[in-house]
Length: 121
Image (cartoon, rainbow, N blue to C red; front, side, top):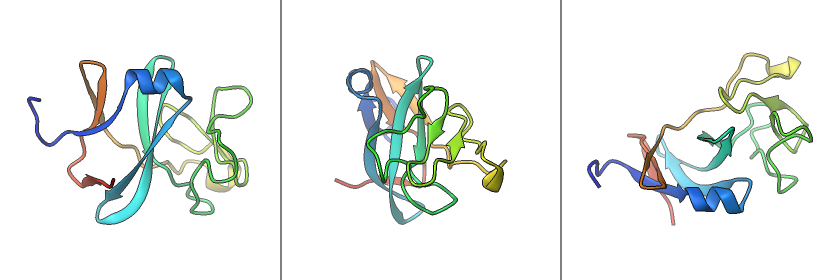
């Protein structure tokens, strides 16, 4: 691998077999999880943390998209987010964003390209 700062997130195959993948990480020294998914063929990753109730998006259900498949949805209270930007579309947190994580793809494997991210097994 050309850049040893890249940390493996998942493969494209993982994303084709499931609607999303989570990874336990430490981000800016805090333990949390990342959620990785594909939307319109593009892979995205965010800290799996809704700003409203400070819970993972999938804390109540094993799903992260709303019934239309157009928005990420926190299963706790139903807040929705633009999957491309992470921006909240619900009135209480309108304009706030999920913390995006940069991804790079090399040979069908997605890698986190974040300086302050450490993988936790």
